[in-house]
Length: 499
Image (cartoon, rainbow, N blue to C red; front, side, top):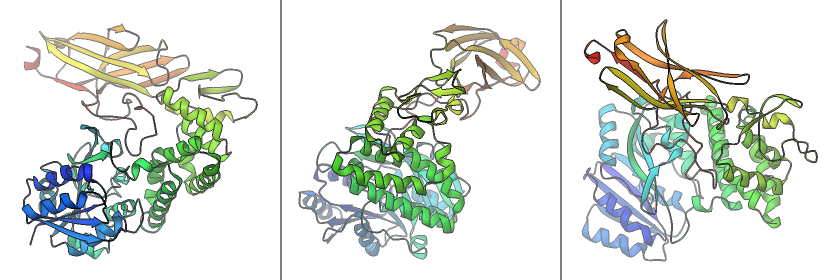
């Protein structure tokens, strides 16, 4: 009996299936079976699968009439013999040590499922999947979605290994249609007693550049959007009964990710599709938690306002602006009209549309960004370089003060500034008492004051914006990491460090 069963449904993926199956064949965990389910392929995919079956007795081939990925996965589960279950899509790639890491974690902890980080695979290049990146920044054993609510973002089934006894005891099963994995992934997280979260990359999720487009690449088509909405409704209904506290974080994710494709579809729609899209949009917004819509970024609030009013042409202009502005609209003050700060994007103050100023209110988005680029202790002197600015006020002459802080002690830090936001500062380490010091920051612009501490810069390859399946179409990353995230940059000094 194999330790792990990997279920791979496939249909017309000839350009990609070989790479997928090679990645499974090469797993460092060798005690596995790979169950291939031919879901009605009419290209050369089956011949590729047969070749792997003929040369590796761990590969098994099943055949069924085309029913979709959900029923195909169910077929695979029914034939699985392993103590653990995993799922892989036939156009994706599984890193060589993925299942060794995931199964090894479950063997150690006894958890019901283990999940890990995901990369996007585009034309042979990889980058972090930002749908998953925030979830898998660090490893955590024996946790649960009720305690680690960011796991609502982990809504895919293929970056995981499930304990088979858990899967069967909870009656987990895929539905027909598309987006069938979303309800299963969330149900499993809620129903599990313990979950292991691994920071290592365990899956590479492909964006196809040839062959049939994937489901996610057809995400702006009306039938696709209806299926996405149906899956979202299933999850919300389940949460209402089993985990009501997760509805708000889940709706935040839906607003950030899924709603973007509906908005873009309306903006690009032909007259024939527009009515159906607007009706779908109305249902989408009616069901969403009010607090989530109210707290949305101003640019998204404007898009939702236009959607509610059926203003497709105006929405198209705002969507185009989003791309051109790279998601970073400037903030302005309207001294004569309204107090506070407002997004300087289309239709602000437009007399014809009369969009309320509160839709544009952007004060909560004026985040302090303060981070270290480099810190070097050389010859008894600490040299720090970094950058400080207020998001949405880039290019403004912001007044900045820096200081070293330890408990009640504070030492002003003189800095040399370049291009208004990058700095270099030096201090004699001998002047610092033993212990840990951190750099405090105050940034001021007019009546706006932001306080915080210097943070480490994001790690290489770490994206902090929107960029994958669930990327806002055409939108670039959201810009640098705000001061609110992560650990403060800190330095510990002892007698030896000053010599």
